View 1 (cartoon, rainbow, N blue to C red):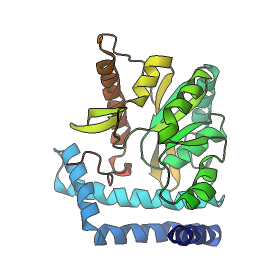
View 2: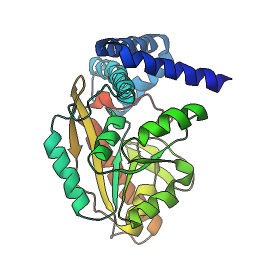
View 3: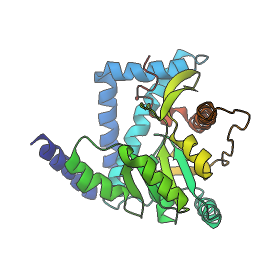
Amino acid sequence: MREKIEYFAVKFLLWCASWMPKSWVYSITKAIAMILYYILPKRRSLVYINLKNSFPNLGQDQIDKYTKEVYDSLSQSIAEILLMFVNRFDIDKAIINLHESINKINEINEQKKGVILFTAHFSNWELLAHFLAKHGLSFVVVGREGDNKIIDKNITIPFRNKYGNRAIYKNKAMISMAKAIKNKEAVGMLIDQKTGGTHSAKIEFFGHKASTTLSTAALKLKFDPLVIPTSLVRESKGRYRMYFDQPLEYIANEIDDEKEKIKAMTLRYNQALERMILRAPGQWFWMHNRWKY
């Protein structure tokens, strides 16, 4: 019963987004975000602590500013995702460097090689996935299975697969990713959240050890795909600049032990994520308990 109620609540939200003035959608999501900012002090405190520990040299005013930006950024992303669901958000118009980005996608495709595009829960990551697929770089998308299976099956998965991407769950990820890379296809990974199990290790991230997936490095070592950090940075409401950073070719040849080699490679990936987030620190999802202090 709970799953059905949640499903119809989401359907109602999407119906509202289909006819409301867009400015209302942005305003409502921002209002909700700021209400949560004030009524959930534990979550707000986690954002503050994560920022403070990651940027120890910043003063309290700047940390407070970034903390509020996190809520504002997430509210804008949610508004845009709702509008994307109901086909009221022009994803091409949203990209400031549109032609440059399309040319870069074409360059990647011309290499006819397996590709891992990795990013973070940063800015509007759903827009990033849609734009890439719409312009010819569709990929296997690795994600966590939603808690509500009705929403997952009928809303989330069809949305993520809209332009040819193929969403898969983490428990089936390695086999699917390996097949895609061997077939010279692309894989999309969000590698910024904590993970456990045999495919993870404690790797430094913003100066502190964080449980990090080793899957990216393991795939690079075995199949030698292109590994490209990719992201969007919001420059104003509904307007983004796309970044394709330099491919990461490092395979730690100076290390003999394979496990240590993979850890060293993963550190480079975390450092690439840091550079990505530093472009706009308030746009990363600092609400996540990344380090488990």
